[in-house]
Image 1 (cartoon, rainbow, N blue to C red):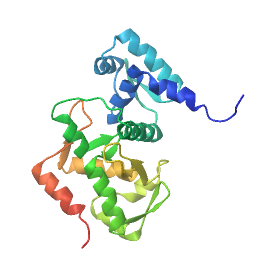
Image 2 (cartoon, one colour):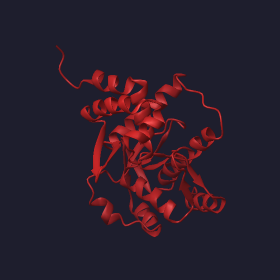
Image 3 (cartoon, rainbow, N blue to C red):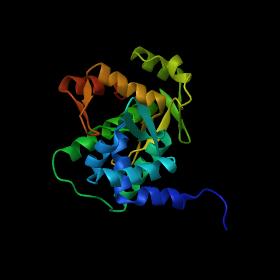
Image 4 (cartoon, one colour):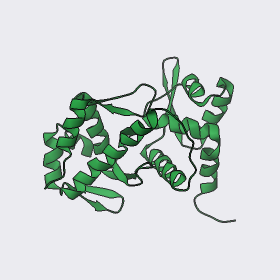
Length: 228
């Protein structure tokens, strides 16, 4: 009997189509009820309850109770990063599900990956951090420099509060559509929150899409511009 991490158990949990749909629905970063997830995945409430129990037991999701309501969310950033990487692998190997309509280009442009910005704009953001000398790569970690600290502070982000969290400040996350990395970690989450606070963009209800207004898009591209 071989010792070590049991990746087969994790693969079996994610490999079921209904459970993969549940996990994908929770990639928005929002906590959803069992009935909302049943509707999203097209299964009965009884079926979704069974799948949720298995995912919770496997440590991929967590349950939060608020009054009479029960909400489910991904158990952490590491689960979101795994799912995003698996989406990239599936896309690169031709394992795609075709969905027609306007949402696909919007998802490729800007979307949430659990709690940070992904898609073309998320990739651009990390590119600017690295090329402009705001940060440097150290493996999967992103190390913020003095120039970067000044940049994000001027954008209205309190770095001292983020550095007190248990989550990494900066982390790279493989983007499944661009197949390059975008910025994750508590800083990536804070930047997305700030973008929404400034009303540059808003998250579409029931979707991972982050929809930029024309003025917001102009402001974003001006802020995250490459130094000449």
